[in-house]
Length: 607
Image (tube, rainbow, N blue to C red):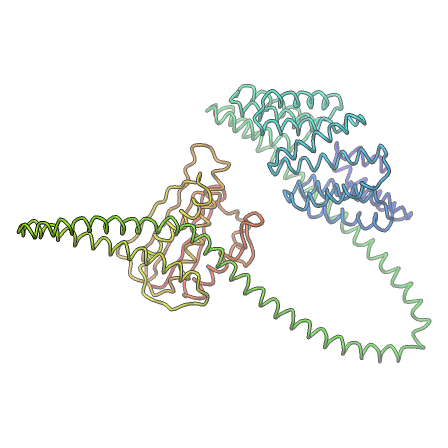
């Protein structure tokens, strides 16, 4: 039955799940932990293929405990490899690489055998794919080529097709057409000889991607169609869905609407089929988990009863002593626990304050980058008009000496106008510097009547130039629609400025992320609008970026929740902004968004 579950693993996941569950139960009945661990590995693989990574990882970790108890190093390395591959499938590349490195270290001290070298090759293949998906192309090429040499030496032809396809993807990323085709053709040949229908479909789709990259649309569509046909013949719905989407996109790009609609329908059918299969698999999953829970409870009950029988033999002799010791230790432990809890609470408060201050200083750093650019403009005006006034004063003296009163008065009028411009730009530089100083202060500050239009305009420019200072290639259209009749609002300037800076930074981040995947026709835009309605002053910040998924809209205001990659966000920006607007100013902070289309934040303050 274990061999049968291995056969079903690739060809029939549902049957694999059912047979593996039976293997696990029989192995438990006859005390065969190694067979239990193998069954758990197959069950975990099925869940991961279904996309239920949490369940897959949980079951893998159960297999880890079995192998640890048996001190089975090879089995443990295999499970660590499965964990790493699962995390990579879930796009958690950091954890994926960590487990793969653990698997690699576990094999380092083992005697060289064919099984060890095969497992080592699989681990290196997964490490190579991890680097491929994180766009570390040179590192990916190193591991994949090393795996290919190991595979060729030991003739594990069932994995070489996968390696050759991945090497083809490496050359696609490098835009090396001939080298990519060479690897992909080998992958096709090996996939056919091994009857690996899934890998054959994936290789055809990679070939379509290559031709699309080099604008050979007919060839791209041809290989995408072959990928679709192969996937459908093997009933690989996910691969059929991927191929259908590619064909739909290609024909849509060619303005071939009938063909585009045809593959759009096909992709929709494949998607519906997948969802239907998911429902069946979830039912099977629930059934197995319930049986497993009951089995665990029964085993726990048996152990408990055996322990009770043993304890009853000695309980009568020591019961009074135990009660006294328990009461004394309970009282002592309670005091210690209270002390630990108080210390922990103090540490948490301190850590919270440090994190909040770190978020403020991070936003100050972004503000400063914009200031370096923005403050230069008014300073240039001040310097230039000062130089002009010195020259005009010399002319004024000459005209006065010559007795040309009218000409002297005209020059004096020009000097007066220049002085007004110097004064205007000096005040603007002063506003920028004061804004930076207020932004860096801790505490709530004092409220004062503020022109929100000026505040929004300054922080929009500072945010934009701050991002431009870090990424010269970034450009976006800034659109402003300020209500000239807007009344002054009684606010803490540095706090509301921090809110605006955070919203502007998020908007620029969203359009910048979309630029990485959108076509050349995409034009990033950030729109800022102010208005007064029903005694409320509103500031609206809208971008046409990546949008926010519906599943996380309710979480974005929570402390430490962030959608940005690790190291690019603290998860405190919107939380602090919400506290400043709602709790600090009695206002409202609302968000509307459509994933892939736009995001709009609206700050409402009492007028």
